[in-house]
Figure 1 (cartoon, rainbow, N blue to C red):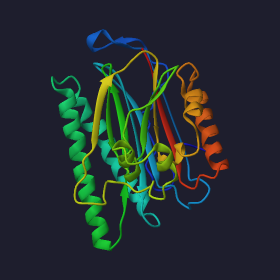
Figure 2: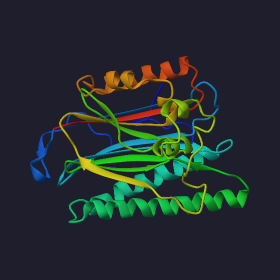
Figure 3: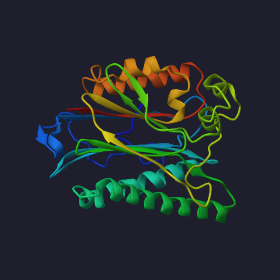
Length: 293
């Protein structure tokens, strides 16, 4: 099993580039009286049972700032023949990594932080989409990638989503999906034309309504909210959650269970093993950011 916080897998950018910090951070005060005690981060990936390449890409990062500790996680699930899916997912991971190091420090503390942040993320997506779309057209191929990420800063979380990778908020008692799947069947369920059970059996369940690189433009889903006491954010590609239940996810990622990085790694490895044992054919990736207030 690969620890994607600390390693590269083939061409994909999974590495934190030496920026991963200790899971236990010193207490510090940030805006609105919220106290961030600790971030614990973990990310794991496996190419799965069938595919020769791992087209998933993931990064998790933490950093110290004058306004407190920040944490960022991003998962991209690439699509395309041979290595093209890896190219797509790695392109987006690289662009957001550059933003984290070079732009975020200047955006933190702004009066309209969320507006600036989402505008910045939207620009990144536009640039990556045009780059990948042009690359594909010039070679007569189709490639693309999902994108699901979360930034935790100043007592709030900020989310971007394109495609069907997911972000969950996990407390000690509940598992809540924060993002909406941008798929054909998810839209049919939301509009009442299909039940969730029918969607699971529908042959079109993997059909995406949009992804980065496949069309002239994309419209990300943006979300923000307040971080609550003892929450873990779980990012995953669709291959990680097809064949495991919500109960299994809650049991593995409830904040009280995640005592340290080794436990988080081990629990992700076990769920990856279960997915493969149950016949999952896709790449399988999960990243966790546990926040303790």
